[in-house]
Length: 180
Length: 126
Image 1 (cartoon, rainbow over the protein chains, first blue to last red):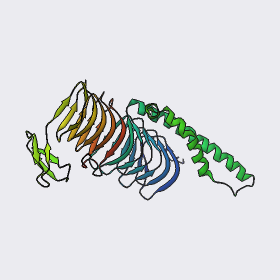
Image 2: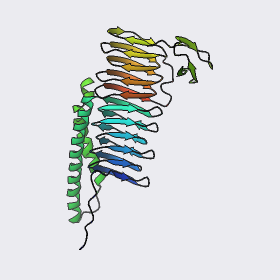
Image 3: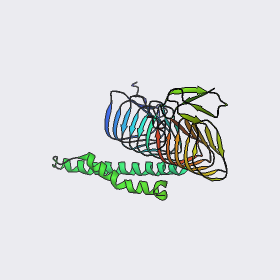
Image 4: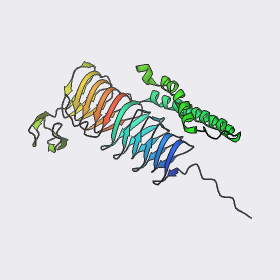
């Protein structure tokens, strides 16, 4: 009797190795550990850990987050954000709690507290919608491809446009706009 | 003994935990080590290499340069810390912060720009 391969358990974190480079959008249900490079948008529902050699350029949305590598972009955490001694973070941060060890480098606008966590939750929802919209647009484009128009296919700009369209609505729900 | 780092030349050295002022053994610049606790309404600048505590009832606005900072009340201003910045539950911190390390406990809040590491905290305020 043939045995089906077991589905990976959601309790096991997804590991993106040091020799991996990913460009685009990544959505992970569960936890993740990143040792490689990611350029684009990343969303993790539970804990996200960025290893010492990890590099993320773009918007990051996560539950809890621990950074030991490099992050360039906006960070939304519904839970705590921890920067290890080797962390280098450049960009805006929204989190419920925050800690940074000596040696960590952090530069940018930081909003910490319950309101920031709520903004993070709103951003996560919007980010997921944007990803769904982008996927829908890509499917439409793919439909055109099958009908014989393969030359003008460019899915990434569509995804980026969709995210940029959503961005003001994300920020308007945050406490920054209220304070400003 | 208390381990400190000169805010002018960044030389690490030790002073007695009871010292209230000293000179850096390397650059000879003077510095104070008094601890300060601020409660109630307060609109002033504070410069010390000791610990500044903003009490639960403290509402403070101003420029603060210190060795370490513990916020349990409200603090609004430009803050340069040569050590650790701790925002306790119900503590509210707003403004520009430069520190070596930072901890914002759950229930505490912070809004503003932060510069951690990179020698940012060691530069003396203008």
